[in-house]
Length: 291
Ligand SMILES: O=P(O)(O)O[C@H]1O[C@H](CO)[C@@H](O)[C@H]1O
Image (tube, rainbow, N blue to C red; front, side):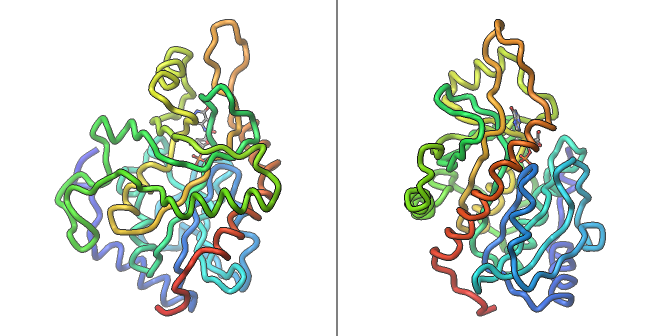
């Protein structure tokens, strides 16, 4: 990865200008849908959607379960934009392309980013189908120097050395938990630490044991770069992981993980996630439609 791949302000703006010329929607909330979770976008009213292949600067989705469309619309009167499909580095995208949409959202006027993902459980107490409110993350590629903020800093977006403590908004986490209580689903709601690994392989047993020792609760191959860029440019962030599989940590265990099972579990919980995210958006303060 070279800084020459870095994206200029002009390139983000080109994408923003194109989108603003095609839709009247001016979203304050953006939602990134994880593997198999794209149907979250289906509940938006007055929808207008754009294929990634038509939007200037957008990369293409190549992973099954990631449709590759940007959907604008309203959730109970609140204007949102939803990514039906995200980008991963293992697809061959540069880390700047992976996070490209987040800066486009910022320039569109988005203030809050909601990220979702499918993740494997490392925590012993988690079960398949659990929903984890993300409290914090460990960004392995970031720790190793693969960071979307590498290269000359664009001060128009944020500072050179941004803090990463308290990135997952405390009030939104509390709001989510209160909503889960009202929905009567707390028995399968957790709060924990998400760890991003590079993928595309799933973890070896020794790697899974290492993650467990490090205090990781759930592992996936996404999310941290988008969250980092959103936080850098001052967006409020909320994240949910759907636990789609248990990560094997024992040499006695013959189970293996596969993407198809992950998509099936995502489908099983999609309605509950849709409802939870809708309620969060309804109940959070949004300075709506003033752009
Ligand atoms: O993180 P999302 O996009 O939900 O996808 C998860 O599911 C895929 C593996 O099945 C990986 O891409 C992993 O990161």
